[in-house]
Amino acid sequence: MTRSLRRFLRELPEAYREPVRLAEFESLPLAKIALRLDLSLTAVKSRVRRGRGMLNKKLQDCCRLEFDRLGKIIGFESRKPQDCSC
Image (cartoon, rainbow, N blue to C red):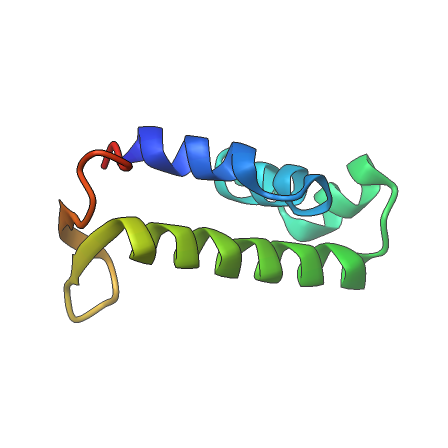
């Protein structure tokens, strides 16, 4: 699944790609991302939120996900094996 997430991340529009990558894969606080990218904190919050939404949509289109009661993914199955590498 990580391979799919990274592929989907590369497909995001550039304005969302780096803020999401820094927040999700490098676990940087939003304030540090704002400093690094020379953006306002509000802009970073918005881009990360929208980018996560885009990633979620791509992932939901690709895979059938199963969640635990806390919202963590505990299982998945490809909807379109030929198009998805979940």
